[in-house]
Length: 382
Image 1 (cartoon, rainbow, N blue to C red):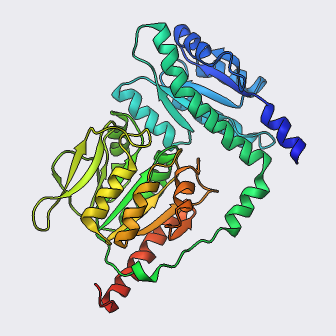
Image 2 (image 1 turned 45 degrees about the vertical axis):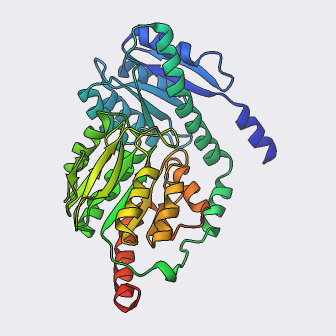
């Protein structure tokens, strides 16, 4: 196995660039050239040409423009997924969407992410080609390399990954903090989030009537498109949070891109959302840690926290205050996460109560709410 790992690790990840703008294709190629771990194997102007290339020479990953003539980004993504399903002998081709910073671009990108695109970047707005290349490097390289890491882990060490999933305890019993009602659910999520949220939020809003607060790492415009898309799927109203908005049952509040979402007490029995432009935490604004800390302060033990798929460790530090207050924590398992960064980091704290596959999380919330409420009836401390 050591020899196989060494050979695979040394292989470059092969990229196909798809965009109707020659200038932008050149900028992407320049941003990725001369990288030891990346090889651009093709550059084409639309989805039709992309599928011709893919069928002849399958790449590992496609950077895919959202808006193109002949076959747009969504149609091309669907064609790539069809190709993946019909070619089980090779690893699936991944897709990073490249979106214009517009409402239309944001709406289409959210659809693509819900349909299985790995992640997205926005097109630089600078007219200077040098600045554009630099911004693309910063955005693309992190996501391309994260995709490559995930691909290597799946291809090289599947048995180790399965072993970790089997041997890791699924439940950590904490009877000393298990007695409480549930007045809110808070969720932190990043890479793979739109698809994960679209999968569980409709069921979750059927189970709980309490407010749900979500931090999804995204820039402005895109969080509004995410809220609008989820609103069509859920029993609850799904909205972007605003400053001073009175929190209501039956609502889902999504932190707007570029701003932290906080919760604060505004008089007896009244909780409101607040927005902050304080510095990013964990490189993120909004950050789950900020939401989690404020939820612990306002709701005390009456919170269920969920950490879903995502790069990095955002949410990990915020779990401590929630657990000390008596909250309950559920994280997505490794096998169903697009990236097991945030959930895995949370598990390492020792504060996680349950590790569950994505589709089991709503049911886990339902059971936890019931058990905590039953325990609270008999608990003299409550």
